Image (cartoon, rainbow, N blue to C red):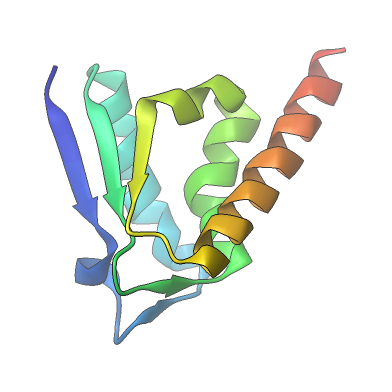
Length: 102
């Protein structure tokens, strides 16, 4: 299996990525890689993110495809704060996904 490595540092101006619109082209890259059967590794090393960015990057995938999509994505270099944001967003969107299914 091929791996698509996405280094968020390449997409940041400085050490922060916060705008929802910044996540869209990265999410499209993730969607393409997942669609071709690749594993996706997202490297957060040295980058702080906002909830809006994470929601557009990962939350939209979970809402569309379900929480199982996260099993195909590896998250590396996350700070404690970033991990907390990701957990919140994924949990919230997974709940919304499940409610929409019932």
